[in-house]
Amino acid sequence: MRNLTVIGGNGKTGRRVIQRLTARAIGVRSVSRTSPVPFDWATPATWAPAVRGSDALYLTYHPDLAFPGAAEAIRGVADVAVAEGVRRLVLLSGRGEEEAVVSEQGVIESGAEWTVVRGSWFNQNFSEGALAEPVLAGVIALPAGDQVEPFLDAEDIADVVVKVLTEDGHHGRAYDLTGPRPLSIADVAAEISQAAGREIRYIPVSPEEYSATLIGYGMPKEEAVLLTALFTKILDGRNARPTTTVQDLLGRPARDFTTFAREAFSS
Image 1 (cartoon, rainbow, N blue to C red):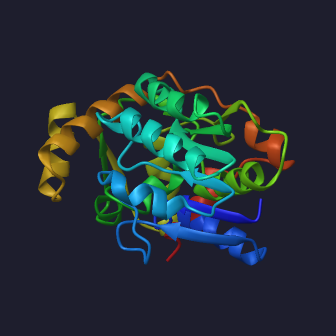
Image 2 (image 1 turned 45 degrees about the vertical axis):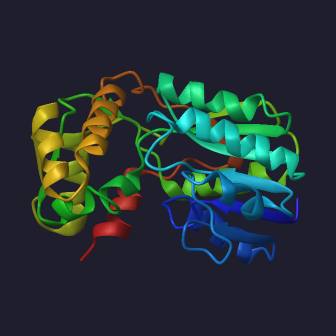
Image 3 (image 1 turned 135 degrees about the vertical axis):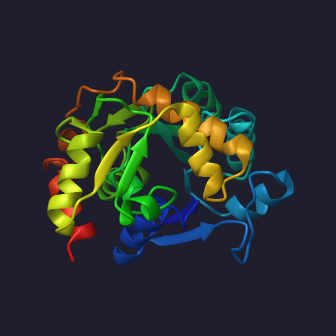
């Protein structure tokens, strides 16, 4: 696979995938609403021009595959991609999300070679995106109670995605990726505090309080409510057990949260 396209190349995983492919001198382009050849999930007329000429396609959907309309959009893009001659589709999905599994079907039934990469909660959610500002302010407020999650590093996701995009042998596989050990949000706050050299507090909140916080940071109300419901679901303990998939695929241990925190928050 020598001509690759990344949908969502400005996102947490997409930009890391592009960096790795570029470093290996593999032809790759990022498409988004602002790219020279634009791609917009909400505008089907943009899909074919954006994927044309590609051998393989990495799909990331914002804000999440579990959101209304995602399944239809994923299926539509997958069908267009196959019609344009794309041979391989790699989809980023979410671990433990029943609605995301419905969205995965559009890629699985497309007729292309397909791989689904299901990620647990990203380490980088604490340093990039909606949570970053409150974390820097010293507070992690989430509707997570004392449940644990084997937080996954976006660097590991990118390494896995590059592998399955560029190597054979992954067709028909759905890979559940996690970090190496389960941590509670209180543990996360302690790790970040240690790295940053100052206190970061975890404050358990209700779903309603969390939605209000997101709205206060400028997120549209509908998206805030849906995202809160998703966070509440996936942080209910269903994903507590780590997998060894990162090590199985890459031949090295998954990146630990301590390493991430030191790199992201050390002063």
